[in-house]
Image (cartoon, rainbow, N blue to C red):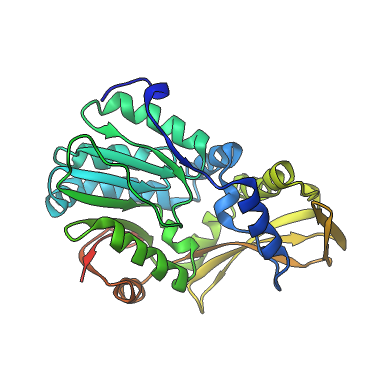
Length: 323
C-alpha cells in the first residue's frame, strides 16, 4: 500500500489537554513531586531524543541497532511469516526498518506513538520503503489499553515490538501491568520482541544520561516548556537543572529536575512551592538482569523463548510468548 502519507488513516487517541493537566496536578501534589516522562515527546522533545541517540555517550540505540542487524534472520525464524508488526513508541523508525527487512512477508505495520509529528515522519519514510506492507498508524499513549486496526489482508500472528529498553521507564509493578496488556494484545499465537538495557558498569550508564553536549539536559527541560504551552503552567526553565544518577540498589537511573531556588510554580493558577535544591522526579530507566526480567514476564503470564545479546552483554533482545 504505497500511498501518500496524507491518504493514510491515522487512528488518533492522543491524550487531551485535560488528561495531561490531570497527570501534572496529581504529580505536583505528591511528595516527592513527579512529572510523567511520557510527556517528553512533543515535536521538539522527539527531535531532541533523536539527537540524544546520536551522542557518543548514549550506547543503547547504537548497540541495539547492531544487534537487530546481526540477529535479524534468527528473529524472523523465531517469529514466523505473515506477521502484523505493532511497535510501541515508534520514534524515528530506524530499528523498525531493520526488523521489517528481516521478517518473512510481514502483512502490516502499526506504529503506536504519542508524538503525532514523530508518527507522521516515521510513517512517511516507512510507507515509501515497504510498499507491500500495509501501514496502520495509531497516535496514542501505549500505556493504555488499545484495540489494533485490522489489516486488509489477515495476518497469521501479531508481533509486538518494544525496543529501546523503554520498558525500563516504568516501575516493576507498572511493567507487569504493561506486559500483561501486551499478552492480551498479542493473542494466543503472537509474541513480543522487547529490548532491554542490561546491568553493566555504572560509569557507562551515568554518562549515557549526562552527555557532554547537554542534549539530555535540554530534552528534560523541554518537558517544562511543553507544559507551559499546553496546560498553562509558568515553569521557569532557568530555575531548574537536569540531574541523572544511578541507584545500584534498585538497578536504575533516576532523572530529576532540581529547583535552583525557593520558588512557586503555578498551573492554571494553582500554586506549588519548591524549595532550593528540591528534586522533582521525571524519569526512571531500569537496567536488567535475566533473573529480574524473567520474573517480571512470569508475573504477566509470559515466558522468554529466545534471547539475544550484543557481544559485550550491554543490551539484549528478548522474545516473549504466553505461558
